[in-house]
Amino acid sequence: MTIRDLQFELFITQDDINKRVEELAKSIQNDYKDKTPTFLIILNGAFMFASDLIKHYQGECRVSFMRLASYRGTRSTGNISTYLEAEQLENEDVIIVEDIVDTGNSIEYIIQHLKTKNPKSYRIASLFHKPDAYKKSYPIDYIGISIPDKFIVGYGLDYNGLGRNLPDVYQLKTS
Image (cartoon, rainbow, N blue to C red):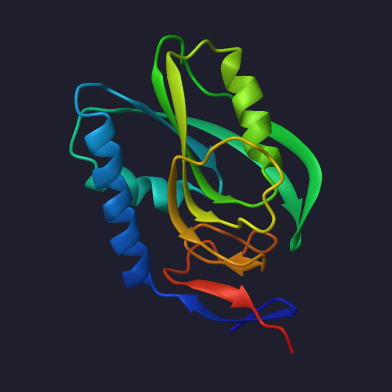
């Protein structure tokens, strides 16, 4: 598959993603059975994951959004910008919903920002995690799939704004 100037190959199928998302929803449901968590969805990348995760979550919940940007092309810029602010989170049990955790810079930024909102608690759910790239000490409480430190696209993840609509995940082809 070609997106603009790059070649990608199938990496994870929609069926495999769906199975893991359903398992994550059940795990979160077990941990929050007597609570009403707020899913804090980090846009743009986590929208597909969050939608499917919440559909499988059988308990009461709230939804809020925060929009960040840190990538240009296939690399993180190291700079994080906020474009949409989360709603009221004071005294809420918050589940941060991320598409992918690689270096951890975005997670660190989100957590520092979230602490100013005085949540009751917070946990992190990420569909993808790159343990070889992760440089922070925050625990990722719910990990869908651990992957190598390679660039991926699809299921909400993009390359310069393209590819988010793909139901499968594709990895950048290395010659």
